[in-house]
Length: 282
Image (tube, rainbow, N blue to C red):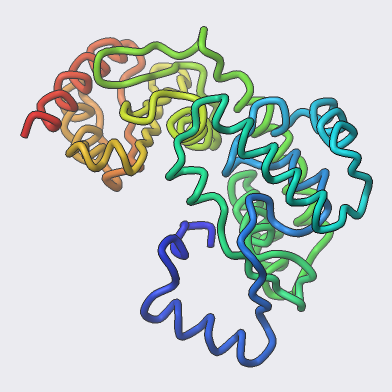
């Protein structure tokens, strides 16, 4: 779930595992929805995929939205439909493409033994890892829940939301073939780049985020499926451009990273801009 492997439907070994668990009642398959089931305010506040301006990380915005739709703690089906329609409208207004919205509106897999949706479980485990509390995440998975892990998740999500909201139009530089920002934060830069790439930026342009620590800069890059369809491969860009400026890099076509001397960021982005242009021309 956390690796987005269900997109297009589970396949191969994944499908076999899910089918067996559904048969045994360990997974309950629920209808497609934009927001996972669970505490509505928590799910809206911590929503990263999708990231919705005025909702994600915005408690006042959430309350205003719910009040406008007459939603209290336990909305009925009709009000939930109205909420989803409103959220989709907000995503479209902020520039999110239809394919990405459709990707986020996914079938939900509820885990009775954990009392939560699989995406929520994934978020908790991932947050423990990103905050350096891996043992909490392992304990959470083995013991079917752990309050320490959930607290670690809440703290990490709070940090993530603050960082995500710091990626503003003023902090993002748009070049001919890419977008980049230099105010990344250790462990969160990739998430910031993903949000900009899919939900706030120009979907055809890859996003590169730099986290500067001393003399070095860690790099995280992301691009949408639309950008991939144009021939862009960020793994190649990260590997070759990082090496050209005295660093190293690599990864996947749509999500890659690297590490370079901080004083060579400008040189790096110009090399990357040129290489992305050349990839699209092939």
